[in-house]
Length: 203
Image (cartoon, rainbow, N blue to C red; front, side, top):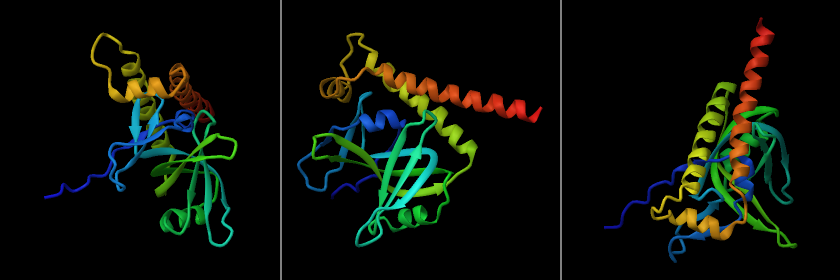
């Protein structure tokens, strides 16, 4: 009896790391096997979960609707997402939402190689929902923690057997993971700054 495929865990990641995740791979030769992007901190991702500020939506389709959305995280880095006829719910959300708005997005990473050999990374959203600031703040705290945990595992060379995805990330990317530590810490600091401003305004 074939095992029922389970949905992949949606990974939490900041935009700076997500946009650097240009390497994709499959775990098997089955044409239906999931495609993963490899995060530079050594985690595979078939789905991602992000929360940020939707700053812009645009119908970039020629013959039919094809919506582009920009979502900015607390560091000012941008996730690009695209939804068309095969993602009708997400496309209608992008059509109806009025930026700026906080949104939560679950979707699949997609890579696209440009003519000059650059790899662009975007999200094909499965769901988009409008959320409040508290939801965005919780996502920032949890994503910072997950990012720092991944970096800890990446740096942890205590003679233990190295995780295969950490090893793969070391081979595929020549990127200092310190960049992503800074992104995590910067996101947390921006939250603290916002909260101080709110407190001062209320006094």
